[in-house]
Length: 291
Ligand code: NDP
Image (cartoon, rainbow, N blue to C red; front, side, top):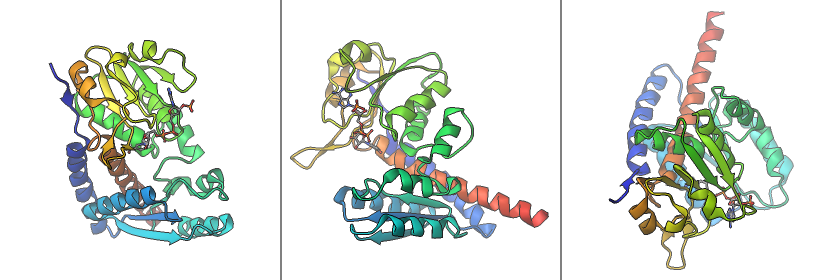
């Protein structure tokens, strides 16, 4: 038996069509969803990620603005730009592309973004809301992973999920979201002794490490669901995940490919958050008119 492929690309296309329809309806109410992306410096990977975000925004009808500043930009200047967009009613989402240059504190920047426009879902207030299961802007990669698992009609409740990686943007939040879906969650990281022993117990294995071909057949239980978040560029220029795809395909029940897996869903969930923010703002506008 070979594993079924959970295509993030196909799911993303479907979701983008639905979002485009929602944007049309919002525009009829006079609201044009707007996303502002702020880039400091010329990190090549950041430029490529931003192109993906721009393409998705344009496809859906979201107004996309790129604010591109030189590497030498001071932290105060960046905070002032964010402040300006916090008060700009045509902007519903603010995303500061990470990583930032070393002289700018990431924490200060994330905390400056209004939680009402934090479409990356990185603001501590939104993370807190996510922790307690309240409706909020969910971080895009973790939210996309949950959508992908659900799209394949995979039961999450009661399953043992093992997450390899504990970053604030992927590992930790994906574990929380799956816990909120009633899974039993185990986290692994660089200090976990005997990783294989733990990953072999996973019904759903989520891998977000950032090392090419790190997870092999030896780490995977028969019929597990394998979600490969990693994006690694090989010397050949080819992209690959953290999981040896050919191994996993023989053992798992489902697997996400790289490319065409988690990546397209991450961008789509960003667009989802922008549309959600625009909808919230349209509702607030309606309430204030009625008062
Ligand atoms: P980080 O580098 O922030 O985190 C990597 C995690 O892997 C850390 O928690 C680290 O543990 C853990 N780790 C490192 N070595 C080992 C090891 N030997 N055994 C077990 N765990 C280990 O990465 P991110 O979470 O930001 O990203 C992970 C991958 O996902 C990257 O390839 C990134 O490009 C990709 N990515 C893909 C996205 C997409 O849309 N497809 C979006 C975001 C990320 P420790 O904490 O102990 O150091």
